[in-house]
Length: 373
Image (cartoon, rainbow, N blue to C red):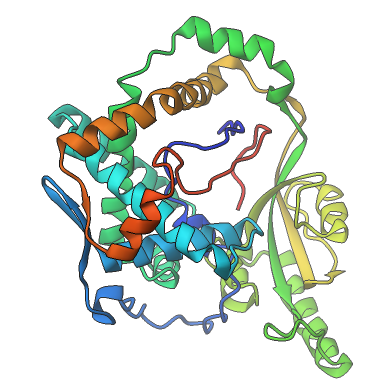
């Protein structure tokens, strides 16, 4: 159980590229996937000049472009739109983030680097296990123009950077217990269901227009036959991977955890999901997103998240608050110590008009939540 606590201006942009790409409605791959094509790298497309440097590191244009793409993908996954007019600020914020990570890695101890590597390896393995196989993970990374190696390297650097800052603040067990007691309502857990779903008859991806009636009827007939196979015992996850028109669902075998009122979940889908018993498969459910069949995997009753399960996340949350207090002065010190220079004239001029203590935009849920797609 991960507890997500709202904090404005969080330290670093988390490695959310995977989460962002998992909700992008890309064209569905064929039932028998072809081998993944290596992603096109930014450095293969442009002249890869150095835009900033400091003692022991350089930041190239390709790295900055990738950070901007990732920020936009993350925003899109959350239903947010970054207007083109905000592009200059987004570039500067992304550059400040890249500089910050390199500065903190530059002063990290060998022990912190080793622990950062260990943490990122665990995080990567957790992501991999949420997908049917590693090939599915590679496809998701490819959608964001990332190689697995670049993704892992970024995760390790972010984990190491946070360890450096966490070592400079102190949050005691008593602080954690007090926060839990003072914010009891934040740890109320709603009733949740974990289901798998398969979708056919989605609206046109380009126009959003519904399918013509004759095509919809054909899709409904096919979905009914797939449901019959699932009821007779065929692997529901495999059926999703073979037939679903929801590209993101293919890579998760259609698994999703929902609570009542979860954003972006159609009410018809929610009602049908909560009405099921374990291992039961729904009749065909029609929503604006298409036609679905749903299989109940697990139901978790409403309750209270125990302190023992919440303490790590509370500590991280409280550490982030304390880190925000020390970060501006500490980063300024490191910029001087490691002789940071922004070589791109336009970025240098823009950066001079903005404070360096504001990281790229980030947000998180205020309520405790279990794993969701």
